[in-house]
Length: 108
Image 1: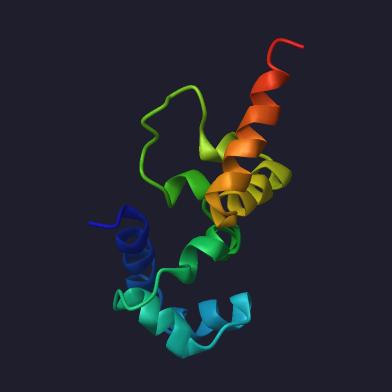
Image 2: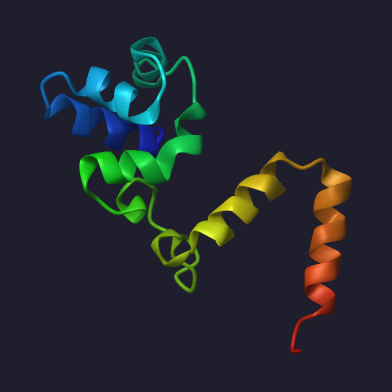
């Protein structure tokens, strides 16, 4: 089960016309939102900050409880979220290089 998708579906079901309004707010088609709801696409992860803002909730409410209680998504800055997104999209060699650079600066 996709926690985030189920949460988005629940929030959408509570508002009449919400799929259309959410699509307009995000600058995507209503079909895109429909694809998310029907599990045909997962690109909603790219829009979590805007989705949270649309529903007037925190990003933390859209993601499963953290398995690492020391870091909460809601506590991350927009730069940190952008860095995580870029890291996930990077090829594995670049990910390893980035981790190496970051680890070499630990304790400084």
